[in-house]
Figure 1 (cartoon, rainbow, N blue to C red):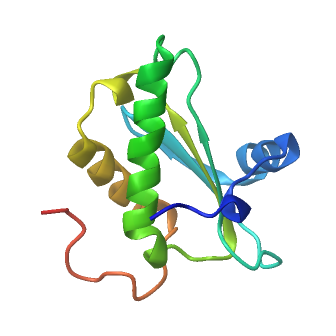
Figure 2 (cartoon, rainbow, N blue to C red):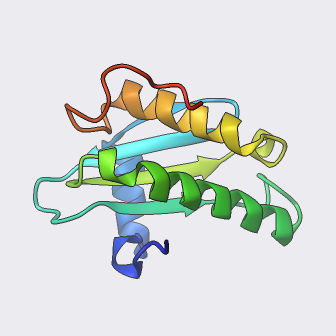
Length: 126
C-alpha cells in the first residue's frame, strides 16, 4: 500500500514548528517528534534522512522505505490530528526492520501518538 502524498509534510515551516513546539524523544535509531494540531483533518508526517544517517543514497532510501512500511502497518492506530516527524540516526542503517518497528512502537506510546484504544495488551511485534 502506498502512502498518499497529501499525508506528507512538504513545507519547511511545518518541520520547524514540530521541532520547536512539539514533543520529541529519541532511541539509538531515530528521533520521533510530534505536535498535536486539532485543525488538521488527517495525519501529516515527514522523514528526515540526512547524509549523517547514511553516506550512501541507497542506504538512506532503504531507511525511508522501512519507516514508510512501519507507518503503513501501524498508521491506523495513530491519532489523525497531529504532525509526526522521524529523524533517522546513524544506527538506523544497521538496524533490522523489527528493531526499527519496536523503537517506533515504544516511542509512539511514550509520546502519546496512538489513539486511546490502539492496543492495550501487546506493544511488541511478533
